[in-house]
Amino acid sequence: MSILVVGSVAIDSVETPFGKGENILGGSATYFATSASFFTDVNLVAVIGDDFPQEHLDFLASRNIDLAGLSREAGQTFRWKGRYGFDLNEAHTLDTQLNVFQTFRPRIPAEYADAEYLILANIDPSLQLEVLGQVKRPRVIACDTMNFWISSKPEVLKEVIARVDFLIINEGEARQLTGETNLVKAARTIQGIGARNLIIKRGEYGVLYFSGSSIFAAPAYPLESVFDPTGAGDTFAGGFMGYLANTGNLSDEGIRQAIVYGSVMASFTVEDFSLNRLKTLDYEQIEARYRSFKSLTHFDVL
Ligand code: AMP
Image (cartoon, rainbow, N blue to C red):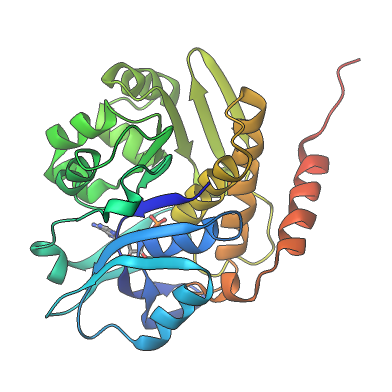
């Protein structure tokens, strides 16, 4: 089953303690779509400017990502500039230029409107809401966001959250959104807003999944060299939703497996700048890392 993703396609400039990438391919929808494309077909809705390099479009098309919903407008592509210090868990935004996103109104092509799996990747929550108004009833709706939108549009964001099956946000954002320092309390508050299930990303410490009163924890894969954490969250979401769409298994067990696939995909992205590692990745490497996750976390109860 294919996935519909709406989010940002961006040109990023990123600095980490290990190097710099200037004007490189980025964006929440870009990472999501590329990651999910290892598991299923992806339909992408986003906007780019007339400066967007053809080589990036060729790359997305080569991943079997349908670009019928990617509109090209006069002006500059969305740009994000960020820096990471030695604590790679926290991105410091240096500059956000909305550019063509300022006037963008997502139009969902008719053939995408009955999408069964929808991810509202990180974009303006007003646009996320507009997308919800244009689709029929998807089987699974997931949503991501970030501090930029939590502080600028909290009320619209809460409207979106009330309508999703899975909210996927990082721990700092969960705290910011709720004013709670304790993550379990923050999760319960967010569930109270209406998100039925919640995945809290904790960078190198992995993820926590809250559903009803149950909690599942998955570690991040222990890597010796983490190069650039940009896009880890979107790549996680891509693996998670991609696997769910591929199997159609929404049982608790299926969701746990999807969480581990998401973690596997994220662990590859951070090994290089931009989408470079995903460009060389193959499915066998994904499977091998999934199996090593099992031995990493397995223990017996005697
Ligand atoms: P992540 O590291 O998973 O949170 O995602 C990083 C990606 O999000 C980068 O490639 C950015 O281009 C994109 N991004 C950063 N800020 C925003 C924003 N305000 N709205 C949409 N996308 C953004």
